[in-house]
Length: 303
Image (cartoon, rainbow, N blue to C red; front, side):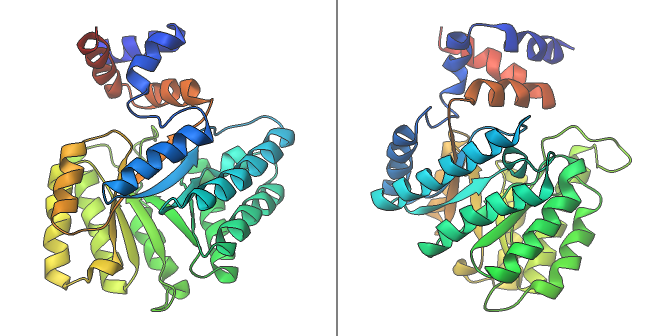
């Protein structure tokens, strides 16, 4: 109840106050700031995936603007020599307004990344978007076999079957590339596991399935039991280090991140930036009120 209370009031607090917390997890408001921070991560031996903040939009003009911004970001990041790729949310390209136009915009972004032999990750959003985003991934992968990936969420009860269903587009030369995360959106019990233990069990089952099928999992977690579970699976199936990676959010559990890196595993950091950081931060609090307690602690710790 306390977390829900604070999650409700934080969106109404002054942006400068919320920024005290948010700046640890946001790589800046501008592409210049994002590139500087991405390069700093590269210097530490970390790969990156850059994401422009902003999701649900109301006009196709906004979708066009988001596409153009992504094209500019890719040009700037490649020119700067950032060692990383790109992530995007289809709703910010108009997925819920016009699926065809959203696909066209996202394809242009993939074309731009592919021109640099690079890669775009399609983020998975809440359940009304799942089928559309799976279909989009299938269609893009057919044209760009090694330049596009997807995110799946282990708390959705359908995810294990969704991974199985992707076997038909998997190959040794162009493996299905999925970031496996727990999932942050609030979903009903009918379609999503609610208990921590259930989510973790299915997370590891999804990773194991991908290893068995020769797919490329991006193991996205800050949860020590899941990291240790992933280690056991890597050992069990003798997976080469180039066949997977770990991923973490910018600013989250840096000590755990470093420990994974020190063991010789590939680690990629999700680098979100943009002027819509306030909406991103407060929306995440509404979706997951447990985060509010962390916010309040951070505010008091920083005075």
